[in-house]
Amino acid sequence: MEPAEIPEGGSALTPSTVLSEPTQPRANERRILETTQLLGALPPDALDTLRSASTMREVARNEVIFRQGDAANELFGIVAGRIAILTKSPDGRESLVAMLEAGALFGELALFDDGARSADARALEPTQLLVVQYAAVRHAIEANPEVLWVIVRMFARRLRATDESLADAVFLDVPARTAKRLLEIAGDDDEFRLPMTQEDLAGLVGASRERVNKALSLFTKLGWLSVEGRNRYRILDREALADRATLYPA
Image (tube, rainbow, N blue to C red; front, side, top):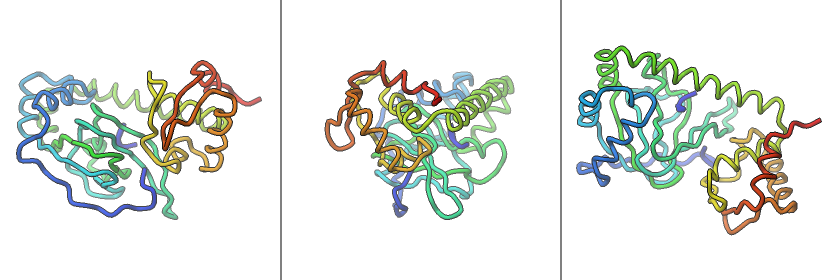
């Protein structure tokens, strides 16, 4: 899975804006490079080289950064905003597989196998991206081969996450998976905005929109969740939601 490497219908590609003068401080670029699993283990001089070779790009809401099957030669760090990663079935249906926020890296999978993009990436809101060419990253890794162990650990964590997702799909029912995803999106906040369509949420849960809506209505009726406005929710009983997120059907 690419990243960690959702559109309602298909939105048209719009031209990205490459900034000649980054609108975010250079410190934000350093933070992206230093805190990601893949690049954070590189020494400071290598990070400085990558930063000087990178560019900043602004993308609009619903803009597609790349599509499944596209050729790949660069990876992206999210300086600000949110990115959705989605896959398509042979009949064109889309399924949201990840939602990435500021500080995340995506588009790196093809760096290691020279393959095409394995998923679509689309901006959920106006987003600023740090763009780094594969060639610069490969040079940095070849000059610092100890980083390869960090990469192995990164892929091991992803494999564990994939195993957990498969177990959820098999053993958790739709209300449990919906509760789990809501808690992940909310984080530590009780009031949160759903930064995606309900169709996208259904894809993230792995169920139909109707069944996810029934789960949301159930949580509201039970007093665990309240609707505060369009795509805005408030968690009223976090403990109950957390318990439901781990409840296996009999």
